[in-house]
Image 1 (cartoon, rainbow, N blue to C red):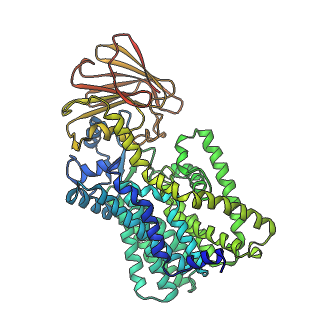
Image 2: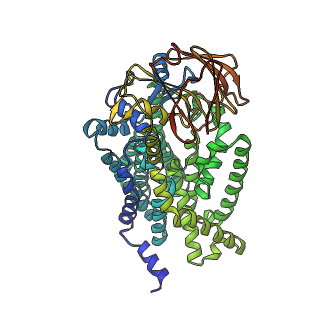
Image 3: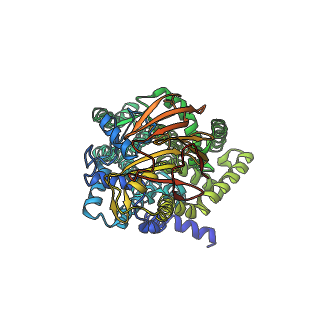
Length: 582
């Protein structure tokens, strides 16, 4: 038996689901030592009842749209001073929320255990995917290959962030739903009639991403279900009914998004969704089928996004041409293609990221595995032409290099990225002479390289303690140079060469469809802000800040991000201009 035959025999082995689960578990072991980061701190405070709004069992209720909550979060520094007053970011994820409540109340000092929960869920998801591929793909070794590729897909590594548990919990339950549904419809397994919809309901309670399960249910009815048309429609109805009921609960409970530039609610802003979806879909397709990852979109200019859109359309057309013969003759290929295409829609409602591709990957990787199988089996006739065979070989080679050969390293890097960045910033912030007590004081960050972690870093965590009484005020968020001029005993004029909100996530609490106007005034805590100039994109470019006391008053603790680190900042003398930033 040659080497290739041995590899195929191992991939076809009955233990492949366990092997794939063990593989992803091994890749995630380093995350056990990464601690808390980012939204983990927000979840901690909410789950322990330390926030003055919302339920402790609703950790994904970030901003509820009420004025009192808005003012509180603005005073704390969580919402930037230019935030939209009616902004709302509330996600209905009760099942995932419950796991976080247990984490932060039963074993709050054991982040490794929280990471272990994510690891177990990831292993379960990969095992379910392996079982699903085995059910659908008639060639066992191709099913095994798909399972391994799904396990090491780089974007799936983002579960190294505790707060992203919903991102793997929902797909795990979603794939289990598909297994139960497929057994019901094709094997006549009676329990699947009830178990499938029940699992789908639980998946929706784990996270909105589970809506993509319905995409595959529809694809299954259209391609794999051998029943009569009425029976196939009837098989979809329970899932559609559950999705409709979930949406009613979602709306009646006041969940959803308003005013954010990161998230959007297609039900509330259908035109904006239709306008942004093509570019988002292009970024996600490139991230799934080629490189770079979809996450790079946050660094692109409007013209860069147009280039991205053109590249996405070209890649989609090329890939559709590659798989056309498979789709034409094989129902499973049609299922993978249609399911992956429909699964794109729900995740186009937020900033594209490869971490959102769990459902899309299910179909896309199935197709890539099938393409690989046609090459290995030398079934060139299945590709319909020699030109398509050559193109397929080039595509599969490139994909396997970027997603399989380099996949494990990229997976580990993604799993550690957010916690490692947090650790880096924490290390840099510890160089500051932080006061022993911040309660009642205001941390004024003249310039910061990010929004969310800057707030968490100084408002919440410090040597294991939590500052509940501190206030925060970030004057600008930019990677560029910021000019700071004192114009009075209590006033500072801040000006950026570009705009004052130029970093990713700066639009979290105010989207570009809600531009700031020159001359507009804002309040943040006791500070009053006057917008002196606005950039062409509607972001503030210059503003004057009037504080409640002299700038030297000890109630203010001044810092800034300058040349790659947080440093203490001394307010300039009257009329003096100071430059900070990179």
